[in-house]
Length: 367
Length: 235
Image (cartoon, rainbow over all chains, first blue to last red):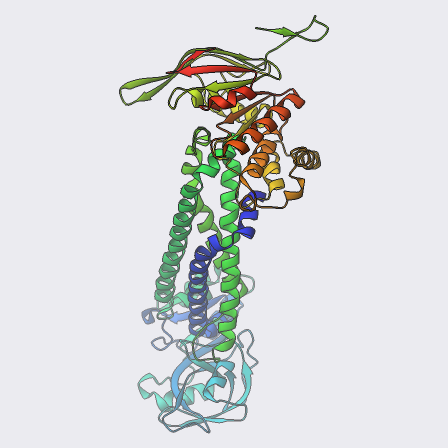
């Protein structure tokens, strides 16, 4: 291993090409991964924040908030039969006119009406007031702003910030249910809801835990479905598709890293056949030589991944907040590094057969 | 052949005893006999020149004596250790401990200093640490290249490289050193100096050696010359 590391230190030029290519691949891997995380966060934050054992939708809605209708009385029934805390929930997606912005420069918002406060969101504000997701700062929203929502220009006033509650790529506004119902009915008459009707119910049942969804359906009957929060996230339009598409791209990127490492170290092994022959003649075992090769691949990959990680962090700082849904996290960087290291070790395995086949006899009689 | 120690009562095993060695290579349907019932004994401290034209079997003989190749038939005993039936792992351990090699083109590791080229033997095998480092320093001093210990091979002359290669071959304190055309890349004067050095080093240590060459001038530095033609040995 010492021998291999000395080569890295004393002949860095030999490894520059592979390191540069791997750095670009690592940047791509980390950037795409962070983009996926950003997209998913911006699509799911509002649902993810729900502190719920179950979210209830009408059976025919396919878990779409807009299509779902929960009749009055179900919340009380669930509270009574399950001993759970139940609160109404609904959303309407609109354009918002922001003070100081141009008349056509609308901010896309999702206005939520809620009874049970999600994680990180305070209790419902006074009627006509909203908590705003901080991503809306990028649209020029500030505390105290009066936003005009939808074509009816219904006014709501921003009274505070909340974090990581975006929905479908839109910054969320959190209001009491009457404010939400008023905005919905005024701006979306086609989706208007009568008093007491909600799009969804949040059920908190500490005792039932994982059995809550089944218990809810048992009480609510066949006209309703109950999903866990993670199931509800998967039902948000586009989330699964985004994850599948991005994961396929990430998989291909890791495969490319594997091929690059495999080819580079296979070529290096061919080039070193004479040296390996000499080392074997003086008593080196194949496993010692191969361990050196793997050690070099790991170091090259770590150097590339470190440069890439730093580059992605700098990129994250350089990109204006809210301009693209990039979310750089330590877990994404570490996961990418681990994937690249696995690709590096597997790529080296490609050269194992060649190392095993190097004949120490080749060292004798060769000039 | 077995000699006795100075007192004359304890027989001393020869360093190398190869008996009835036959090596056959299979090339498709054809069998190529590289060595045919070769017999050779090298006594302790003896330097034997192995002379023959290209393709005569010199390298094959050396490879078998050094535990790099196994013979098709016959027996090989080095320093009293019968390696005839050794598998590849046992042969690797044997090479780590019992033999030294000096290759035709020196074959130093290009990115290691002279001292590190000696220590690579320890790194690849015994891992003795400080003992090995002390031995490397001593060898470099004895070979007169201690002032070049931090130089890479590319910064050394041909003779200095050859000295480093000799030092590397002696790092594991071997019973037998195999020299493969050690002067082929050197001019006459430097070649003579290197052979003088080899002789002095081997004799000073009582280490046996086989020097493969097709240059008859080399033989005057050796105790005995063995000629090989078409896989047959003739003293």
